[in-house]
Image 1 (cartoon, one colour):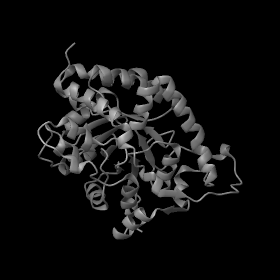
Image 2 (spheres, rainbow, N blue to C red; image 1 turned 30 degrees about the vertical axis):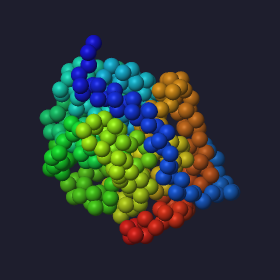
Image 3 (cartoon, rainbow, N blue to C red; image 1 turned 135 degrees about the horizontal axis):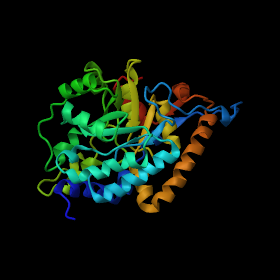
Image 4 (cartoon, one colour; image 1 turned 120 degrees about the vertical axis):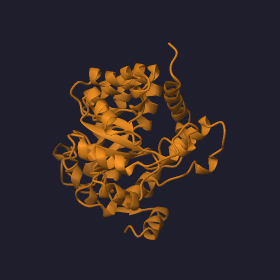
Length: 346
């Protein structure tokens, strides 16, 4: 069956994300954060509580399968695999952008499969900020979502040949968080957030913020490769890294729930994000890479490793509760320290 242009764009995103995986991950921002080990932990791994109890969302684990894809035949199979694994490992999961289903009814199957494979799991719907309350409620209802992610992606839109050029989003975000009966999470797509942006989101009532910095899937690079009219190579490194974004968020009020994603490739990265204040951590590109290269069985083995290793790392820093990781001593590289000082973040 011939797929729509929008569905083909989704397939291009998948192919380019995998093709550029090594290039996108050649610099690892979390290497700029080192944890101070505890040589005598005086505790057992059985004492560890990994659930992020202060997140305000019912997650069993502090990491989850972040938004990736949907809308095409290929993405239907990928989403089915992720949903089965989310069920098996009690992981929360976010859908890829569901905006396509309002233009292409055949795209609905790629999202319906998530609830079919994981009827009782914690599932987050996902839409662009260029949406409205009616569509948001329809997307939430369609998959019986427990929360809604709204992705903000100014850099991606402005590089994308067919992207939006009018980026007025705050009024919509305020309406959605007020009217919807599920939590609304505002998420970057990999360009990071400044303290000024976080303040704007707080001012319109947003309680869950995913800073999603650079270091993972690079949508500036992906859209530049898709854009056959202009060259945006100079924007391939645009944005803030995830550690920088977490430092930017340090001033946050206690009512804000902070989530991190972007460049997370190991359980150690998850713990480092927790040390920097993240209450939950999303993983997208790395899990997709493992699934494509090694299949569902390969990713099953990797998820087993992550859930085994994470409490062991927490033992190495003498922390029994995920919520207490911010107390762990740590040091920054000279570059990250210089950034934090110039931005008056520490």
